[in-house]
Length: 409
Length: 72
Image (cartoon, rainbow over all chains, first blue to last red; front, side, top):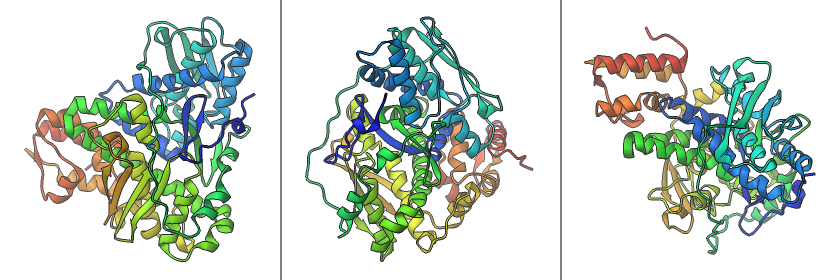
């Protein structure tokens, strides 16, 4: 029923929208790191926004995608996108007017949490609880505010399956005001200063549509597991976390939360970009054009500009210092849809990703084929090498025309 | 008062790259309560960090939980 090819990639804005929701890929390193950061602050009631962020995005998306469909077709649509986007498998056939108790043994969140961190003491698939709350609301025409959604067993805790209970009751997650439409910054882009940019970009344009869930609803690619996130879901996690940390500790809370969010982006950039730059596709289609380390970074930017994260470019680039830009980056667009303007830059994932890329190209032997694949290898590298610093200098939500970040030794 | 810097040194040897920040996040309400605004940078720069015993004990407990090892 759902077909990713029905949703054209917006080449002008390096953007993809499905059912009214902006969509972006993230890898399991980023998602699990982000969620662990949030859960570390165990004095927050974070389950409310971990579930609520998913429920909100999915409610809008499924409302659009299920328009005109009957109950059975709507269930099929919800199951299809869950699988296609890489969250695993979910069977909604037992859901009825009263909700239901739903079980699955295929879950991106539970599988990758255990892979990365080992067993968890508490269930970790908050996304699916939010997803199911939204599916129930849309399919049975309930209001999100009247729904109770909870995960009661989790494979990441050693259980045989994940169990989610969805029913009418006292709501246990946050709901949010309506969002604004996406507002792009329509300004001329400073292109990547590299003669092969267009060749690389055109080679990979459309490749995103090949990255869909396999028979168990997962997207293994480039040595990581990818998920196609509703951008506002995953970004709201960051923004709500920072908002709550502000309430706990003011500016100090923002600073510390920001450091941890940057680290999540760093891990993402490091592992995913490493996977891309050591892939067979890179070897064949990109590597012949690479002469310098700077070429590696420019080629990577040319490639990822086909993935829906905005338009990445480098203004200044050397081993000691780089200034990166992103036009219409996914975090700022998301922030403005949900919250309006910000007093400080909010593009931690983008900026951490740029930092991870610098670390990867200049502080490892990746360009000579040496990979760091293990968690311990990553930790050892981060401890032993001179680390790059990250300074987020401009953001669209702050009133600037683009995201800009300095990465320097 | 007790010097918590040796604990941070131990955590750096055994924990994640961002272990300082993770520890600070765990005890942020208590840090704020005692008016400490430690950061990774300030920890790196300091030779010693004297804090009240109760706060020290809490940081040891949370650090051990994060790293999964006992600090001796």
